[in-house]
Amino acid sequence: MNPPSLATPAAKVAGSTRTQELRDLLRSRKRLLVLTHNNPDPDSLGGAVGLQEFAKMAAGIPSRLAITGKILRAENQAMVRELGIEMDRLEDLRLADFDCFAMVDTQPGFGHTFVPPGLVVDIVIDHHVCSDAELGLANIAFFEVRPEIGATSSIVACHLLAAGVVPSIQAATAMAYGIRTDTADLSRNVSALDLQATEFLSPRIDRQKLAAITNPRLPVAYFQALKQALSKVRLYDGVTLCSLGSTSSAEMVAEVADMLLRMEGVRAVFCGGLVGTSYYISVRTEIGVDAWSLIRAGLEGEKASCGGHGSVAGGSVQLESGDARALRRLERRLERNVLRAMGAAGGNAAVLGDLED
Ligand SMILES: [Mn+2]
Image 1 (cartoon, rainbow, N blue to C red):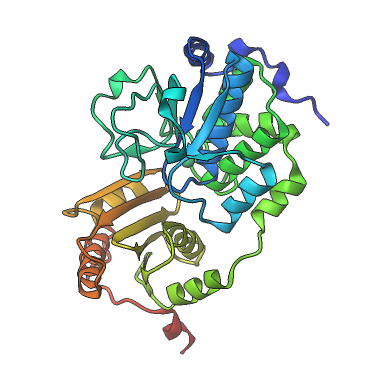
Image 2 (image 1 turned 90 degrees about the vertical axis):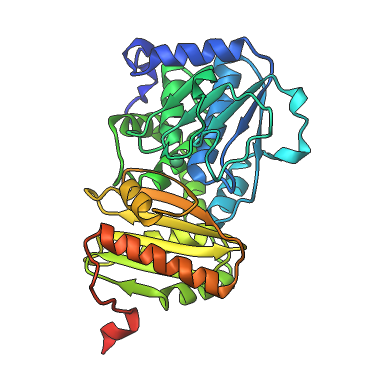
């Protein structure tokens, strides 16, 4: 096996000045709390665990990870279980016990992110661009938002690399899985930093655990939701729309969007689903089609929050009520906007059943 890139001199690693800044900031504090967006995904968990390790190994301070919402997807639950990722519910912690607060894979003000009122965020490490990021981000002591990077876990991993920290197998596996999911196995939104991070983490990955995370058993409800979703697919020239109606979670919307993008001829997928009174949207596009522009076009005129990077975007619209009429009206507005943006207006939709005829 090739020796890992640990021997790379810190000075040669891009961003090492920032690494020094991050380390200095953490060294000036006693206890870190790491936060992320609601219903954390693998990249946010990987980035969080990696930052915790950075705090401990590079700056010598302890930390906790707190989450809001739930770990939804079966793969993500398996990730937490297999890697023994420790986390608290945010409401179960006393914020006064911490003197440093970090947000990873998100930013204060994002629609899917809860920041306790009055909390001063010290560290933001993220790769999303977003329409509703809070003004006044200049107040954040360490602010590193890099939309050109495929995964937040890559940014964090490269801080470990630059600091000369060898990550634990747990953290390395978590970050590697985060990079994998956000870049679709290094096939989309990939930068040189993502490749560097992957190479750095690779020798430290527990491949057995990674396999268990990637292919967990799935509940029957998952297949029921999938059946329902596939019956709602509308195929236009180049763009596929799918509104799942009421569904179990935003993760299901994202999962269906990922799946539909694999269909031959599909250049863009705009997928939505209602959870309670929130209508969640996932956009996936092939390389060369900007998902962020498409979701903004789709949500034009809506009171919505959205974010994205490269060929992946997501957002949500808050409805007054979750009744069928309000949902139907929203679906029509979104469809019209998306078709116009993709130049498919006036085309006829096909449904999956039609193709067999
Ligand atoms: Mn991410």
